[in-house]
Amino acid sequence: MINNYKINFCKSCLYSSLHPLGIMINENGICSGCEIHEEKNVIDWEEKWQKLTKIVKPYISKSNKNYDCVVPVSGGQDSYFIVYSVLKLGLKPLLVSYNKYFNTSLGIKNLANLRIKFDRDILYQNVNPISVKKITKYTFSEFGNIYWPILAGNTVYPVQVAVNYGIPLIIWGAHQGIEQTGMFSHNDEVEMTRRYRHDHDLFSIEAEDLLKISNNLNEEDIFQYVYPDDRSINKVGVRGIYLNNYLRWDPLAQHQKMVNEFGYKSCKFSRTFDIYDYVDCFNYMNIHDYMKLCKHGYSKVTDHACREIRHKRLERSTALSLVKKYENIKPNFINQFCEWIGIKDIKSFNYIVNRFRNKLFWKETDVDKWEFIGLSFMMSQDLEKTSNQDEEKYLKYFQSINTEFEEKDSKYITFGKGWSENEY
Ligand SMILES: [Zn+2]
Image 1 (cartoon, helix red, strand yellow):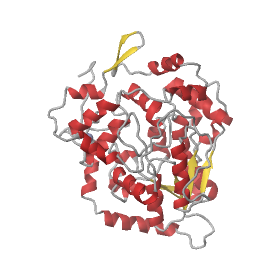
Image 2 (image 1 turned 30 degrees about the vertical axis):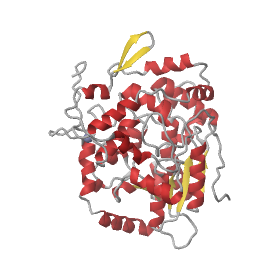
Image 3 (image 1 turned 90 degrees about the vertical axis):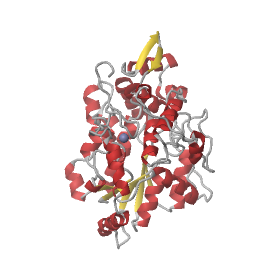
Image 4 (image 1 turned 120 degrees about the horizontal axis):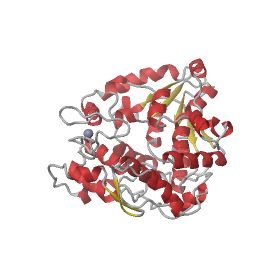
């Protein structure tokens, strides 16, 4: 019990009842995410894959005059595996990518290599940087969120392309409501909705809302982030399918396969042990991740650790020790961000950050001195047993031969043509 809040922790993973995307903990003390994950061990995945092949069959064009589906990609996360799976289904995808502007050279390289290795066409969305900066500055100072335009762009651009090109199918990787929080069962086979994007991806802030509350933003700045209306979507019959409903989703195994077979490149981060997820972005695993710690009392390393616990590669107490090792490490690349967005100095930056420190998770010990008393700290008091798992041995999973040490001082790549072993 902290400040009258009764916080329940899952007995299996590290999530709590305070998870911002909604996690339920059952009467046995197990969270909805862990419960739904267990379905992975009983579902007949061969049957599920066959079902997916039947679902997509009518979308496979015989005329070669258009693409069969839209596939959102970036130079990181699960992009390679999604394209690989879509090609296995016999679909001809049009790849689309929203330019986040915080690009690392490794991300640019990964995206170029993806396009070339899989021999696919790609469309890029480059919203004018003046608007992107204006919106980012606004959402950072008002909501402590530097990633709103990226989350909005990533989730809206593929739908706009589907509508404008008349391509009725979009294929996504994992649905977070299944994979992380267990809001849905794999058997619900949920598809993309405007509602989920609004409530969870955008934390209930739509482009139109920004216009209403900010004096500095106008229609010209935000129209690229507006979701197409129902009439346009229905006219094309656009639907979005998530692959993790139809194949046993395991990001670590998938990434390692993509590294070995297609040359996906990973990198070491200072704030987590996973080396595969957000290699294309300077800020996701740094400022954005630190803001999550400020506001929600945990960060991405907890997500990675919970994922690994569920796949039974990591024991709970070892996971907690890894989380504590990484989560409080200072984020990198703050100066680049301040320069890019026009924040005059680190003091002004910290002033904004400190406004978003949730007092449930942070104690101000002196002027501008903050002590973290967040979820991992609370859980340490709750942990019943410790494991004998060898932490170093576990971390060997994340020492890919392709690891490039990218997290060093460098400038954002605004536009990157990319390069690959077989340049075109
Ligand atoms: Zn759990």
